[in-house]
Image (cartoon, rainbow, N blue to C red):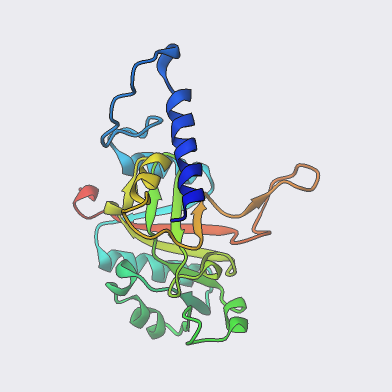
Length: 228
């Protein structure tokens, strides 16, 4: 990370620290630990469900990988999906989802630039991706751009389907950027924080979805033991 960015982020951290002192107290704010900054609470999955649904997203909580594949198949059938733009990632690659989709006649378009042409991406009915993080407080999906997970994956198809695991939940934005702080890992070229389907109110202040991106976003959350 360059020096200018480090200085900017440090100024932001200092401003946040100063702006959140209780009642103007000069006492230092105690370490946050795992507690959500704005009341994310202890049940991150419940908080995420509430915020994500309020933003217009559709959440499908499942117990395991087999159930996740079943929900994905139900969705492609219900929406008459013919072509899926497929990303890569640890969670996705652990699922037998590609074989399942091909079995029901779905055409798979690989999101890797070397595997398909850009014009094929525009023909996709659904973008299937993993997630880097889920932010409980805001109900947001976080995607870091990389060759196997390009920005187009979550922008071009009219429906975006995300498969994630419970362990990827973080309480809020402060926790996200704590993970992405210098020294933890390299920052991506683009970090997308997606909160609900694409929306705009530019014309006559009327809220319209699906104009600048997907009109639907679904998250299949593999909860494991947390679902019990």
